[in-house]
Amino acid sequence: MASTSTQRIEVSFTLNGAPTQATVEPELALVDMLRDRLGLKGTKRSCDMQVCGACTVLIDGEPVSSCTVPAFEVRGRDVLTIEGVAADEDASVIGDALVENAGIQCGYCTPGMVLAAKSLLDRNANPTEAEVRDYMQGNICRCTGYKKILESIADAAQRRAK
Image (tube, rainbow, N blue to C red; front, side, top):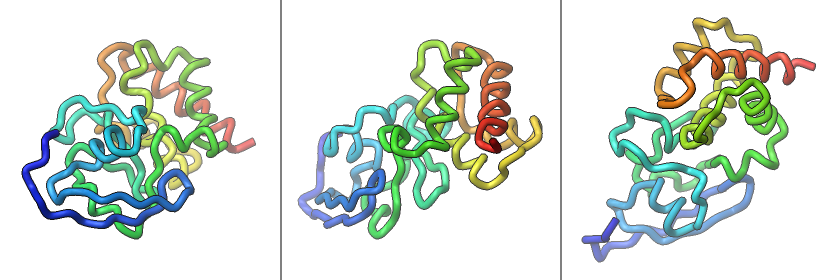
């Protein structure tokens, strides 16, 4: 995204558990700061309209579409991306369950799915299928259908309970 602004905003926040600082233009989207300024390519860009969930990250534990969040809005907050999942045992269990239950194919939606599922399971350790469907409705997969994804999240909930 080409910048049209000469104004800059200093942003200090926690990114994947580490203190982070960046200088951003007011119109810069969080997805662009993560991918282009900080080199974290796991957050995917797709619809740019808060529809598909490919760009999902967690801000203070809440799933957000980083394509529509201005980067400066993370000042003083905690941001978790898929790159931070490796250090988060609960989230990596979700990724493992998706792989082992054939809940992924091309993988494009997987980072957003993992982060949204982590947020759900952090709030509700044993969700019903209806609760999973409702919570995950902002994450679209164009390859697998949703049966295997739902099974994977249920499996991850069981694994986390042990």
